View: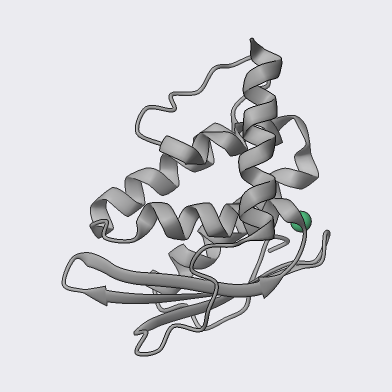
Length: 152
Ligand code: ZN
C-alpha cells in the first residue's frame, strides 16, 4: 500500500519535472524573486501577479534537479487563484510536512497534490530542493530583492 503510494508520488514528480506547469516569464508581474540552492545547483525565478488579496497569476523559470522543478511546478499550480492568507497557510503546512520527524505523520489536509513531496523529508538535502520555490515565492511577496539562498 505504502509502496503503491510512493510509486504514484514518484510518477507525479517525474511528470511535473518533464512538463513543468506555468513555466514562463510572467508578463505584467508585480512581484518577483530569485532563489538559489547552491548545495544542489538549483536556481529559480518566481513571478507573481497579485491583485488585492489574490494571486491572479504565478509562474517560474529556472534550472535544477527534478525535485526543485517539480516542487515549483506543483506550487504554482496550487497557488494560482489563492488568497494571500491561504498561501501563507499552505506555505506553513508544506514546510511542516517536509521538515517533520521521519516517524511523524504530518497534517496534510488541504495540501492536495503537494503531498507527493512528503517523501523528501527522509533526504535532508532534498528538503532544500523542495522548499526552494516556496521560500522564493515568499520573498517575492515580501518584495525582497536579494537573492534568496537556502544556505543563509
Ligand atoms: Zn535540487
